Length: 230
Ligand code: A5P
Image (cartoon, rainbow, N blue to C red; front, side, top):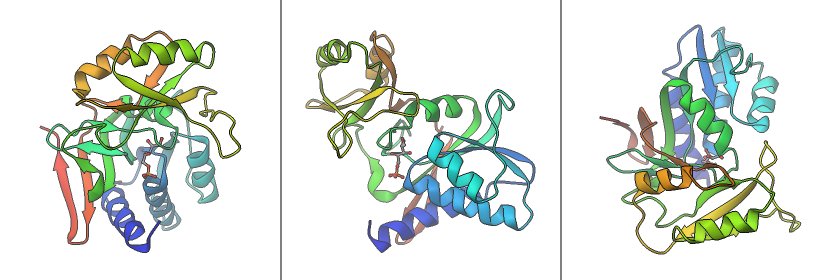
């Protein structure tokens, strides 16, 4: 990761964390950009800001604990005022997203769906005209019979590849699922594909976040611009 890329992630993260006010229940996203937001939130908590964080992954929970950010669960805080999270791709205009490159998409989607406001932080390279043209779509599947599920995804036009750890073993999400990274050769109509994926037996969740984004803080060398959903 270059210094410049980190600087953009930090700029987007700080822009979003500036929205957090005293007493807010905040959803804490996962991934490298969201980690910068958690760091900034930790800094403000040390200065006296009172918040409760609901983390979207074990890794984020550990980071938040280490920074002294009080954390809780959806059981205790079923409604989250504001969630700040990263994304792999943001579709221009619609603000539909691809998430899950970091493997936390299920918990991220559950927290996002419980949030009044979903604020996405990205650098400008992640804003695209069409989703899934450049990056695969992560689809979380039950390990049992995953090959059968993979075949079903092929019939929807996907080219699924089982995500593996560096040691060659299958990657497991925090919930113990596998992830199939699905490339698509032809253009994807994201909302339509999401609906189809919702009905595939064996799919736990997929990384298409349709109509969930409230705003996107996009960092470029010239500054941070904010895209709003309509
Ligand atoms: C985690 O599962 C993902 O959804 C991340 O939010 C997404 O991959 C963005 O990650 P980076 O900020 O590390 O690029």
